[in-house]
Image (cartoon, rainbow, N blue to C red):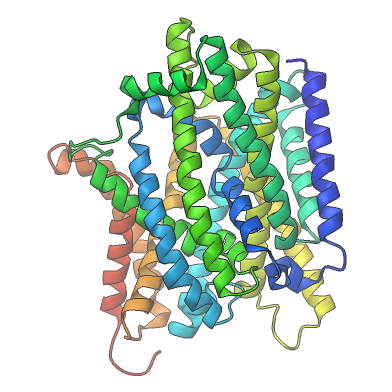
Length: 484
């Protein structure tokens, strides 16, 4: 595709985002930034959360994983659905009852300042590494297909991307993101559906015939019965449940949008509706992956070395030009939610949990000044991490960093579970011990389980083990009596 056309698409799409920003950020204040003045419309939030949950990595990686794993990932998605019900009917009532803006305030009320800070810092570490990794992969695609041809270096591409996100989120915050996510979800799903029809057309099939071919193919297997495999259906199902509870229900970025709804009932309707939509959309991404592999098999196309690049390569190189155009819009639409929600939620958590800017002695003006400084600082941090990943330029190392970010959600699961299911106080000043030790033990386990346990491979269930180890550590720190 002509780089000038790609640039034009990028600019026009970004201008559309800024128009939405202008509409949503007028008369905005700190409450607008943090919780959208609790006036978000629940079905708008539910729809927009699709774009936020299915990031640029999902946009490229889920189709790419189909060759090796088939549809086994769908059992994780079924687990997601169950997990979303737990979030809707267990966690959201708690957050609304306590009138929280940052969900980690619960840890302060339940255990003390040490646990409160630990929970917030775990989120900040997880989201910083995870979001910057997602952004790096998307910026890299834009670099390869657009900015290289324009002679613009990767560092400048990253600066442009982060600067744009910084500008359209710094004022309206979560109120702006709720609406921009809606736009981005629409374009992302449009790219998904259009590509399926384009592949069917190239194969001289109807869309129904394509679906039938996928159902009859080797790629459509959902149930893996080998218990030693990472893809065993029960491991996948349980892991999906706990991934959702932690990475949605205990994640400030995802919960901030829910807490911007007008009341608990609306937030619950949002979450339940979203749970149905995300199952269908993820299944479509798996279907797309199978379609891409069937297409390359039929056309004798040499696949790229990295499975993640399959969608982009087929769209830009082999399908009609319009397909590359649509893919680009979908990719950009998937890229922005990875950044805007991350910067806003990181700013919220650091401002409220670490700096405590909502104290009475801080005027609205002073709170806003500090918030803007924090917002800018996190944009710089994410930019620095993106540039660091490009300097490393070793996918195996970067994947390990991304995996490490996932480990830090386990202690959050343990902390919240201990608070909800026991009434025991803990030695709050020592909470850092299980919070650090549990992920380290899990990392060792993940790297040695195959050798230690006769071929058993630890998969997503590592998150459950991590949370359980943290829970046990907290029990060891607990006692009957007054909290200390």
